[in-house]
Length: 216
Length: 216
Image 1 (tube, each protein chain N blue to C red):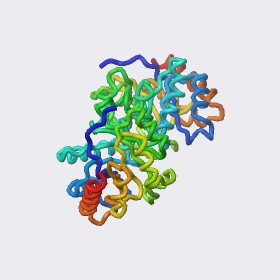
Image 2: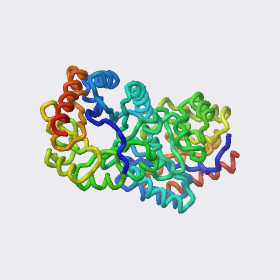
Image 3: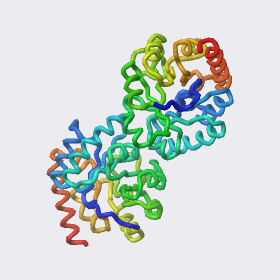
Image 4: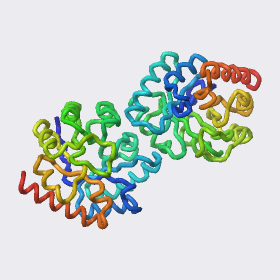
């Protein structure tokens, strides 16, 4: 197993419906200034063509800063825009098929809702695991029961891959995610819905870096 | 330009919402017995994993009969199941990107809502064109104005590719589509919603074959 050198510290997942009318591009630009280290473009309702256009815009601005672009669910969109990888949930394309299509260089992240999911993802060659959800959240309503920080720690004890906590994470609990074995935090509304996404990202990143100094 | 040898005479497009509760597999099996020559799997609401599972089931049963399986919109699903090709609308992945991903052997069909769309699709290397819509139809409500049989004939005069009429086609107008230059008919509700999909397919196929004898 080769672990690719990606900084997952502060991983932004976009959501156009939570952006209070602001374009995804503007949110991502602000978040980059604030210090996000990885961006996942998630589009659940637009056409494939619109998804591709949006992804190309983000790829341009992220790659200027050396920040990877991950595409949610859509392997075809990732191929079309030469994104850095895909993030796959348990109802998206199975990992072995995605790996066969995308090759070894692509990042493939898997949402794990249980220790079993995480072990399977590692065995099948995932590059990182999104541990989901740490806490319940109004952002996603179709999630499994919250794993809690203890669930994150249990997965940390069992797998080697980078673990990214997601679900209900914010400035108040960021340090605890790092303390319990998270390589980073994925956030949606904590940045996307923030009055000032740049400031929100900056504060989160600072909290994560402080926690790393303390707990690593 | 290489024209691949596919029989587009009777081209079934699936639609689970119009199948009156019957599974897509059952509709397709019946339609194959009735004589469809090509099947496009269209899924607009299910998860990627469900789409892939459905496509694998259809691929198995179609390939037993030498009938091609075309995937609507999703280049990733087509790759995952090694389908014969994709059908792309004007808001799906642009043809040049799809061709770069799928290679020359894959069938790529394009929905053309105008002569300009058809000319562009031919120039960009489409394998066939879905001329859409010939007539207005309750099946799709987001379509361009109907092209009519005269619109089909105008496209026939300008491009060499196989043309497949779609939109409001049934036993009554099947022969006219062939007469005006169609290589075949694509149907959704005429088979998917039929009381007896096998009989509906058989009657349509017979009407198309009679028209070909008369007008080719």
